[in-house]
Length: 168
View (tube, helix red, strand yellow):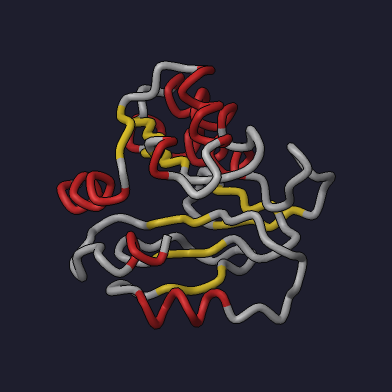
């Protein structure tokens, strides 16, 4: 993720929403680390933050990050999905509802099937689905689950993802 953020062109004109499975530590300095490495502004999403183009938002620890149709975030502390909170599925599904065919979902390395249902929702609104090439993933289970469960639009290594993102 750091490598992708560090290579997104500075004038990138879309919002980037990042959902990482991590410990429930609210004192994390993850957003600061990503901001240091990124070429676009990065912040941890707060409830009701407007979603702005050219910025990256990180789901806060222990909250689901929802994207509202009015193009702002909502935080939710309901039950975990796929043993995860934040859930990639939840964010992808709400992004698909809010942005429709303009949604691109990218599923990277991970140890469970979270994100697969969200990619299916994105595909259902004619959005774009991308899975990391499992042979290049640190933990291949998550992108492999997506590839086995749906026909993703692209299977990319990280360099290919960077090139694709910068052409959006």
